Image 1 (cartoon, rainbow, N blue to C red):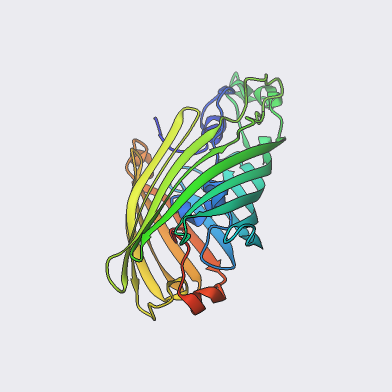
Image 2: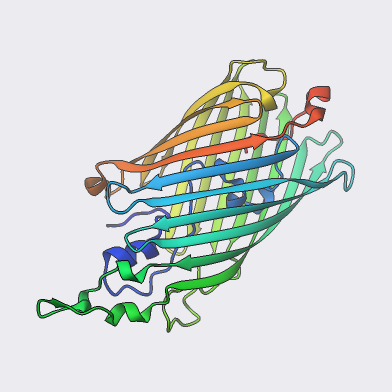
Amino acid sequence: MKINTFSRKLAVALTLTVGAFSVQAQDMHFSQFNGAPMILNPALTGYVNGMYRVTGIFRNQWSSVTTPYVTFGGSIDGALKKDVAVDDYLAGGVSIYNDRSGDGNLANLSTLASLAYHKFLGEESKMSLSVGLQGGYTQKSIDLSRLYWQDEFKNGGFQPGTTGEQLNPKVKYFTANAGLNFSHMVGEKFSYQIGVAGHNLNQPNESLLKKANNEVGLGMRINAQIGAVLQAGERLHVRPAFMYQTQTAATEMIAGTEFLYIVGEPDIQSVATGVFAGGYYRFGDATIVTAGFEFKGFRVGFAYDYNMSDLKVASNGNGGFEVALRYVMPNPIDFAKRLAFPCSRF
């Protein structure tokens, strides 16, 4: 079976195969990648139409195949110092994510701190260039008592130990990430953003093997994302998005569109009441359906993955379920000037 997604290859190797100790792990990921902006690109720290942003996200995956892979997390970010130079500002944020997967309860607890500088360009500040840096601490652990190995079964009997003794139940490491993001408000009805980021730039050693050598490190994750907002009418907004990322031998590419319909007062879009629905395709893996609503700075989004990869025979097409929450504290300037950040995709 070849699954071309970030599905915790280390967990699969430890729980479903025997003796595969050279497999490298991948970072956690979400279908609603805009629901966890700082794990996507550090330059998106503080990239928001408002004073500050609070997010939360939960994902449950592969419950029809094995012990569910469960991921949840949250973050808070916003401006630290405004008007550094004209409209420029420095933003900061912190985020924490926890991931548990497989029969061996492979756990990944990550805490990240981010800084980003947002530079506005042009006389009317309709373009911006953002640079972000991020540092984090991760702890990975596994419950060896819940795993069984082929060489533990001998002559019809069970002899615990052996293979499992070659593993450490817990490892810790630091990681460094960086990113760039460019935004442009072309007019009142169209804006877009383009970003690129590199994660695990220091390629930390995160192997559970006791005798791991320096070649066993967490591979760099490189991603790129494009988002846009098109106002198709007074109340209808179209939000196409594309994301690509690669890490070691795994790649992920998602493309799709959401449609937002404003049912409340449309003048101040950052707090307008609206409902949205959309569809995305994760190439070679799944079709994703999203839906939700926005209300007074709150956004609640739901997503479901319908598996279309080779694993669909075992999963019966079932993939992952996600719920993402976001709150943006409105900026009083929005009410006074009806202004907006160059792109509100995130």
